[in-house]
Length: 229
Image 1 (cartoon, rainbow, N blue to C red):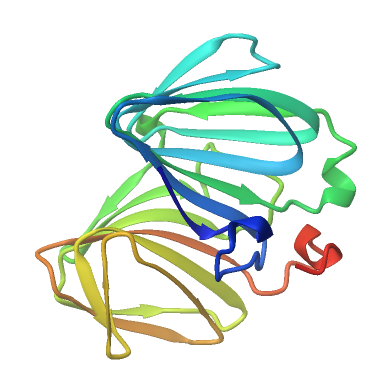
Image 2 (image 1 turned 90 degrees about the vertical axis):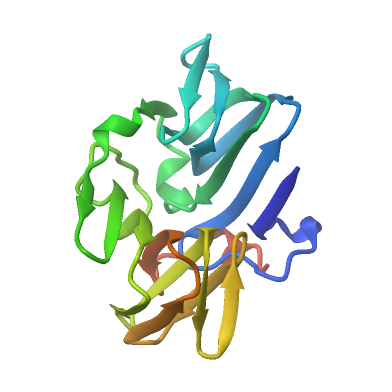
């Protein structure tokens, strides 16, 4: 099963690609399933394991590798790679495609990395716990992204500083919050840009969000702009 906060045009989703984010799927399976071997070029494809575990095969490694909850995988597709995925029973993932400027990356050989959950730093204070996935961590890619974080808030009220020149995309993994008079719960997705603060009230004991900060203007013509999607 899949829910797609950012879908391909044929998916009929309301949110088109923006910034350097091209595609975002929340996928899960109760009984397990296989996505057969298929090709990619150009894009950088990140898979983050939310629950359970997956198995992954690609034409660079030429073997199956297992990833568990909290692990992250990146395919820098470059001039071409094929891969296949198994989502094991009771597992769920995010798969997010980033646009790294295809004019440059299509000339590069494909590369691939797995990152264990343990390599990502976790910062705690009285109000929150933040796992830093991208931005000063071993995880690297060419796409213009400021940071990727998984944050659990225990504070009832929070004011989050924003940069008006950035886009903030967040998905609620657990709990619920209210912002600008609107309630958001598990599985909801929001995009914020042109604002300098985000104020919200948590209406659950704890609320966990997955957050990506990226530039409003990447500085190159994205694939979606070239295709006029």
